[in-house]
Image 1: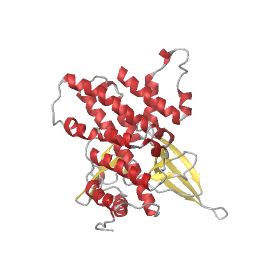
Image 2: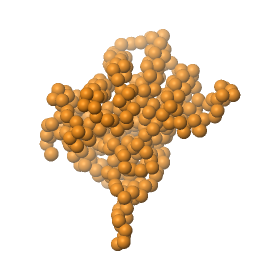
Image 3: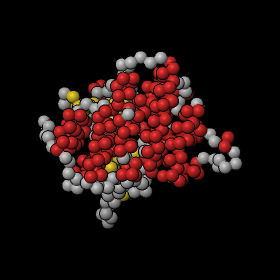
Length: 349
């Protein structure tokens, strides 16, 4: 693994360690000999402690095929920062819907209008716009974040650091200008330093868990109150073989949803990220019409011709997800989100 990777991994891991001291138990003591640090172990911990949509892009960036300062590595740096911004904007937007629905927050009219124009087809520029503007709205109205660390870390300096990527992505990421090898190498070094800064600022994500609710069963006897048996997948992993966990709770969450949780000890505190982030792994491909469905974690990308469109985290080809058994529910959730934020009604509401 190259020196540049090592600097990124070490810097981000050190920030994670400040937020999650238990990570120290997973690495060897460095005090006696600095050479014993295995950066592959640190890299794996960094990947696992970011939510899957971010972690999977870092896994690609840290892979053997990305060790050269070439165009492939440059493109993956862009992909990593874009997916990071997408995830952050979806978390912030999900909380905005929650706070507005409970009448704790007022959405300014200028944000409503601009949001409706931007949200139907997303881009890196739109992710950055949402992060900055939702962050400012929460700060102005003194709304507490689900992840309180955002209040301190998401400041003007952070927003400006995100904005840096927009023109770079438009020109270089979309191949509007041609770079020679020397320019590519310089940008790989420069951009990775800037990516490191962003990842350090969101290292607090290591404290939280991203999960997918696979199943909820009601257990009720004649002499006992109802108990809700949850089966969830932990979407913090270095591969897509996610670990399953089971919970017995007196209350229930939402079925077939992706949740951001404060703790794995209880299901009481969570933020529902559906329909912006979805998990298709439980879908049974029981008809030919479903054969186009791929089992993956998907992120919303656009709404066109009354159709929700998603991008996979491992799947690279386009997938038509309209035959999902819960697609109608996803549509209702999406239209509810638009209605809450923009105030406009869509057909079918």
